[in-house]
Image 1: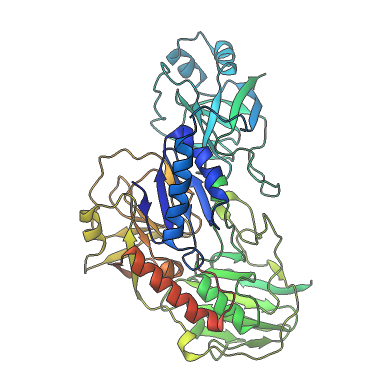
Image 2: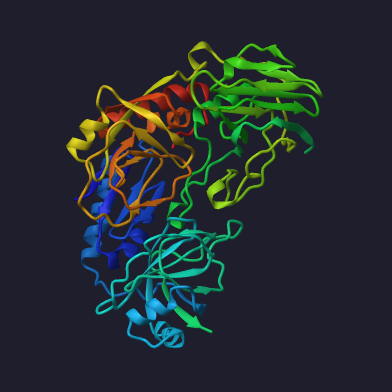
Length: 205
Length: 311
């Protein structure tokens, strides 16, 4: 059921369809914001420029079109291969949970994984990643006590989900390493490196 | 561009705010911009600026600045009735003309929280992502938090015209507030009933641009596990602690707590005037009604402020 607020809609969607929905709905109306979530996409509009009927009709049109399209990853996704240094403070714990002997084995393991960027949020440029084949992966919990300071570029890891911290700040995820890439630069265009739907792999050094 | 104003008493959380970061939430960039964009637009009007020209936003504490050259200044929002130049009271909501060396001072406001100080032509502020706003939690935009001794440059031409706000726009925030809400995506009727109770809420000590804790009763806890989803300024969340949390312009763009309600668009600028310890009543409205209220308000405001934007 689509939530209809005063100036925003919330469309529930399966994770694999969100990027496609967001891209398809973008050109239909003068939206103020299109914001993917983990299981939905929010759309914000100005009621002075767009009526709620127009907004709902645009959403229904796109959903109907997408119903005919298969769910496999679009060939048009941007792909990233990020140089990573595996070996953060929680590396030993995560390796053990995966049944691996240590950091070097974890690095080899993570090099073979493929992730989809589920959403960008929490911090500018912060990315939430979904492993494309999560079955059988352990469900690692967040830290009991979040760290006061996690460095920008840190890789958080929960099993089927990972994340990339885009700036220094507090963090509650187990940390297994760091990427070299700058994930967010406000003076760049676009300022955030990653977008929902992008495909990402790690290149451990 | 030359040095125009030197900060003497900085006030709290004082920062430059111009055009907001619009349409960037999918990159995790919040709106930022003025907490009370209507008060900022009115202060800008007084000195002949566009509604979103870069202004100083200051909160609560006394604010004082010295003119480094002749300037025209506007003040609107909380405390507009307590502005002095060289210790002498000024007529509120009118253009102030400062000579070099004059000291502008705004006393702690009786009601409301945020005051906007504008200068003819606007304050100089680098453009970032097409906007001119400070986003303190991300460490970018503007010139950070203003401190005593900081000098601000002006930009653009100053209008010489003396202006005075009409009576109906001399909006002075009071000591109690009423804001209207529509149900949010995770609304529950028991939570909504509590939020709209007659005795209202007390604005908590935690009240900043990221969000405001509402103190009163605890909202019922949700057992549903919510997957991260978009939030907006004006969203009221029900966190595990029970105290409702009202999001402001600097709140992170994603949230994992139930979104029980949303402040209506016409009232969102008033979030910027919520001051710790004051009373807040929330009144329920339906989405259709909220849209009509917003459109009506914009029609009225645009007659006077043709470029006003309320997000």
